[in-house]
Every structure is written in structure tokens, then in C-alpha cells.
Image (tube, rainbow, N blue to C red; front, top):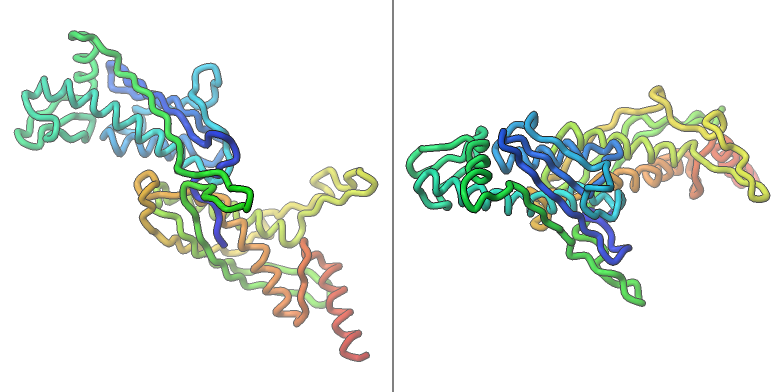
Length: 324
């Protein structure tokens, strides 16, 4: 499978804005256009800022829910947040570091190129002298030209609209993956059980190992539901199964062992070499399950979900054809 890994150009702008504010005590506030819907974007953006500025996560706050103050972002889609919002954040961090380094170089009587940000300090690699980052911020505030430690940046990915022939470059980068599944089919009841799912996926550089495992597991489980049980049934325009009693979601008892093998590459256009990966694991799962069931039964099943009724019908039709 391949999937977009850096947004998708479906609007005039697929970019994201970031505003950073650092207060006189060295606490950083990230105002990001990106939206947190449970995917962990607040955590990964805070991790990026902490890495670049050399401060602890406990000193970083992310605000992304107040549309009165947050910058523009097109929304959560196309596995774009870590890539697009991450690049926007790093662009803003670069400007902030330049502002802090300029004043720190004056305080340390050194050249900016010798400065490094670590452990809450700005340190001269040449002399070993350092100032805590909060003291540098106060020096920005209280000494002429009396600047606020506040910067903004907007990032627009390199993606382009498709042309009339549907050719283009709709994403800033692309993700690739393959999956293998082990299934068991009860030929008496038609029930399909997924025993193991093996996921190999190009994720760029892993930013948050725990977060990426959660995204992979979630995508695979969605794919299993799509393959085996989830179906919206309409009749004369009416949805016949509008509740979770009739719309069959996978439960904890249905989840197989998921074996994830991240393939780390270096995406040059991505933050720290990362690319989007969250939707991608959903793509191969239902196809792999359908192939596995078809392989067991010796007959092709090419409609989803693969319900017990469809399995039993396939077995019956195969038997009927063989005896005809």
C-alpha cells in the first residue's frame, strides 16, 4: 500500500501556523493550528520543542482548542499533523532560538555560532559559560530594545493539486507498508478469527515510540472491523442498523496479536525525518484478511465485510460447483 504521509492538497492551503511565547520564567506556550482529537499531537509537538530548546516537557504548554487565538490550520486529515504542524513548529522554534541566541551572545560575550541549548540553559561551547534560558528571556524583556519573546511561523507543504488528468503531487511525502495476516475459519459456522497481524511500515523517523504503536494498533483494529463486521445497511434510504447493538464493532476479545516492525527512513522534508503514518495501517488489513480467507477456502471473496453468511455461501457454492 501507499498513502499520503504529509497531508493532501484538497484546499488552496494545506499549511499550519504556529505561535510561540516564552515567559520570563522559561515556560513555553505553543499556540498551534493543529487539532488534538486523541492522536497525540500535543505530546509530539511538545517533544519536538523540548528537543530543540533543551527544556523539559513540564515547562511546555500546548494550546490548540481555542479558535479565537490559535493560528490557521486546515484540519485533521491525511496523516498530516506530525508532518505539517511539526514543520510549522520547527520553523517557529528556529526564529525563537535566533532571538534568544542573539541576546545570549551579548550576555556571554561570544559569537552566536558557539551557542547550544541544553538543560534549560544557553551555553557557549567555546568558553563553557552559560545563562539559564529564563534569564535570557528577562534580558530580552527588560533591556532595550525591550522585545517580547514571541514569534510566529506558517508552513505550507510542497504538495500540488492534481491536474485535469489526475496527475500531480498531492502530498508533502508518502508512506508505504505491507501486512501479512494469519486467520482461522470455522467452516461449520462461517466465523473468521484473525490470529496474528504482521505490519511492516515506512514511518520515516519514529518520534514517539509509544504513540506510534498506538496508532498502528488502532489502524489495524479499524481494518479488522472493516474486513469482518462493520457494515451500514440501508433500505429505501433508511439505515437499518443505527446502533452499536446492530453495527458490529470489534471488541477487546476480538483483537489479535499485532506485530509491528517500523521501517525507519529519513524523510528529508519531515520534522526530524518523520512522516505521517496514522491512517496507513488501515489500508492493507482488510485486503490481507480477504486474501487469507480466500486462500483457505479456495474461492475468491471480494466483498466486505466477510460475514459468516458470505463464508458459508462461498463454501456451499464451491461444493455445488464441484459436484455439478
